[in-house]
Length: 94
Figure 1 (cartoon, rainbow, N blue to C red):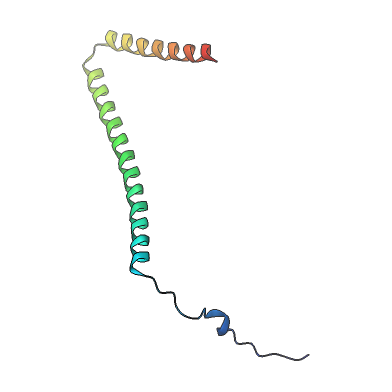
Figure 2 (cartoon, rainbow, N blue to C red):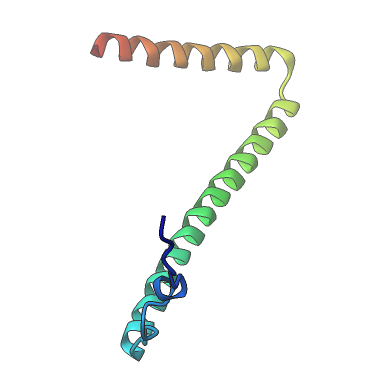
C-alpha cells in the first residue's frame, strides 16, 4: 500500500483573513448592544415585579397585624368567597 503525504495545514488556512469595514463593525456592535439591552430590560422588569410583590406582601402583613381575630377571619372568608366566585365564573364560561 502506497502512502501519500498530506499537508494538513493547507486545510486549516482559509486564505486571506476576513477584513471588516467600519460599517460592518458598527452593525455588529449595535446588534450586540441591542441584545444586551433587551436582556437588561427583561431582568429589570422581573426585579421590579418581584419588588412590588414583596412590598404588597409586607403591606398586607402590616394590615393583618393590626386587625382583630374576628376581622382576620372575616377578611379570609371574603377572600375565599371571591376566589370561589371567580372559579365558578370561569367554569360557567367553559
